[in-house]
Length: 89
Image 1 (tube, helix red, strand yellow):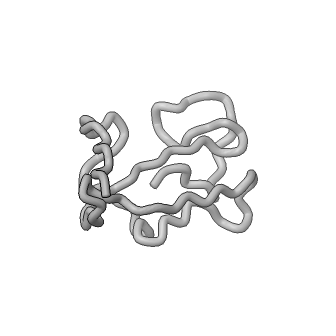
Image 2: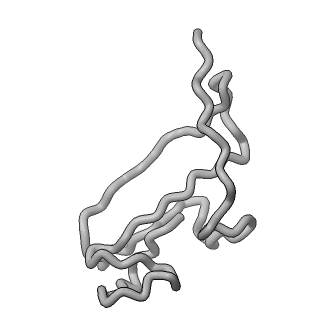
């Protein structure tokens, strides 16, 4: 079996801070029942080049809410924030 191609290394940031995980990071519940917008489910595994699980692997995602606004201090746009939508994890 061929080895997997490795994803290139990336510098941490500008948004992610190491050791800054939400309390629900294990479940990664980013929306609540009242959250507006289409639900998207992302699942997968983080593997090394030999197809072995990476025990401390982390996949960071960001998503704007249904109004197009990110839950981040740098997004000061006019779109409405949705308090029931986390948008990152």
